Length: 445
Image (tube, rainbow, N blue to C red):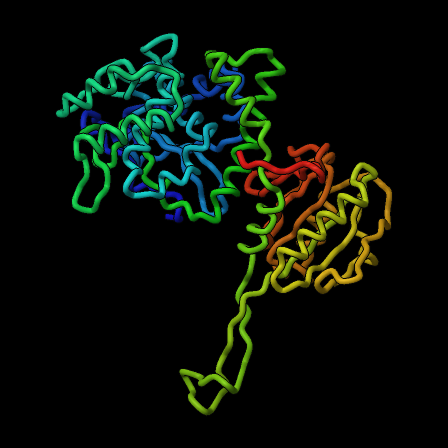
């Protein structure tokens, strides 16, 4: 599996007896749980709004459920159908809420999970934070084995059981983490490798879902994922605001989520990381290197990393010349090779506007069209047989107001949307960032 997905490391809750293959005597429709997904969207506007944009997959390899991300940072929710089938409907929804909350609070992208010394404590702390929100009004929304502040868990460590029983509800994961670290230090809960341990859940400190692959998330992906999570949270909050309801989420938690959205990620940093990850290998012949297969008979090879990037600029009037110049300046600064290709489009690609620019020196972008916007013009251009796979990446600079673009073959796509633009233009799997105000200092979420 990828650096971020790790189904082999998901939790093994020993008290559960779940199947890892479909039961031939059980109708397939009993493994679908469509009603729970629909009820979640109806009853929990915020979480349901996020859920609509998170792929859900039946995964018979796991014991319970999990959220994870692939190499592109795309988030998915996986679950064991037999585990879900064994729960009452309200607890199935509780499990789904638990997983989506992990995404909403960016637990999967926090650097604490990459710290092997603290990761087990972080697993417990995040579950305590989330479960106290889900069960803030009723305790039976989750299976009994789930960790919950104010309730003693099953453990061979009476001091730990008493600590969790004494903890108040509705605190942040960081708050619970601090209490657990104090407990671990005072009671010398460390193994021979210096990692904190807790006698609870499985060997990784997991009690409901699998967090096993979170720590494998490379640092360069964390900010990218945080931006993608922020977009999901924004969509969920928009649904909640439209319905004037956050469902069962306590008002103080809803206020915290809305406050998180006010912090802006640095779109420039995300752009730099995206360009850095799109470099491809090029092979050049050279007499200065020995050919390993035919020494001194044939030239050797030299490999270099080159990012072949094309920037497609939307000609909409709401995309200002100043916005384009800001975008191009950051793109040139982020490209180590210093050369990018630029092309304009509206409802069609303006091939006459195509330019290769080196280091952006003495370059001033000029508007060449003023029609509507069709992102499929970019798709057709990239998928043309003459160019298919030619570019490492295409960065579309736009206000986002047009129907979604179709599939692009062999080229990664990133969207840079103007401050007043619409971020729903991106397709699942694409990276999207929104430009901030030029004069405003940018904060990290």
